[in-house]
Length: 496
Image 1 (cartoon, rainbow, N blue to C red):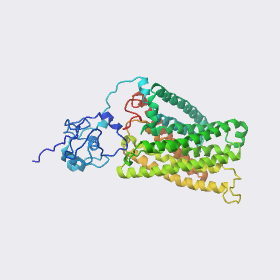
Image 2: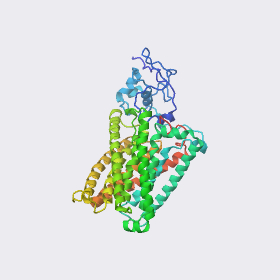
Image 3: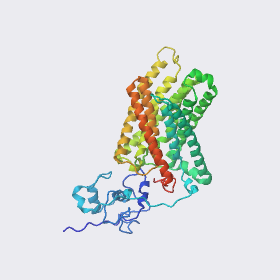
């Protein structure tokens, strides 16, 4: 009879199962645990060798579908796994497949920690919870603003639809004020948290969502408050047009500073490896990129033709900067996925962020080309005129739409393979970028005068509305049950 399998005491520290979902979403499988120093003489030496339990809190005689993940994260890369771990690894893949049938008899099947009911948490007052009200809350307002734009752009309207869109626009303004007031209250009550939030290696990447919300407000204001006919708009709302133009130029200046300043700070202050790559790394370039989307909406109705051309030129420049930097980030993202596989289950919705840049660029190309004056001709030779530029914009938009579709498919399959079970604000990534994807589909359908594409966009809009309601429900529920706005459960935690 073969001797019983022995468990190495390396895997012994107890970890709260409810905290497993707060591990870094893109951390590599093998890392040295903090505080564990491994000597070459004894690779199993460390502070974790104090008991004979697994990190998940189960005894060494149990093995389930969830605890091997904890073992892998606790194991220093240069150690030699015990025979027990070799048996477990021989029957499962990198992403947690079932144990090999040849070894099924060697383990007692138990539920993973992620399937166990969460431990009860003490109720906290509003003051304590506001300390964890993060910049990521602006994902709610930018998604709601995007929904109002999508309703306004629907190709198949019915009576009252625009009034619904106007109501969503007003609700978004109210939500923006509430979120801003709550965040300001946090910084007033806890002054040290402001600098910490903007420099935090995780929460800091969500600061640009504030400017993305501003972009949706500027664009929605033009859509709902300015008449569609440019001549009527010039006659009835000249003051509002000038105010929107001023807001556009201020937005371009500020977001350009954010794009340069935040990335410069990250390059100097943080050391982020490929294994820690997150889709949120794209966010600092996102606001300046949406300058092109704003330009595509407001350029046609500017008070002067020269002003409209200037808006288009600025929007095109910012849009080019945004899609170029996003493409560089895509290279890191693909390399990270190739080397380490898909993100953790709870954070796969973040992959939808990659859908946004090409989709919003497609919208900007078509909209800015149409925003040029009909008599626009750069060299006055009849070659580079408005019609020719519009054709180029439509062709480029088609290419970029395909890239968005590819990222959309990757994200959908990743989430479907392992749906998240615990809400966090990253779920809103399934709404705002896909709003741009749907708007780009509408723009292409209108450019090609194709009813099939337009009906596809209508179906996409309906699905996006359901997604918005689904995420909103879980957002409200998470606030009530203290899944967010609670110590250790928000974007202000570095290992979240």
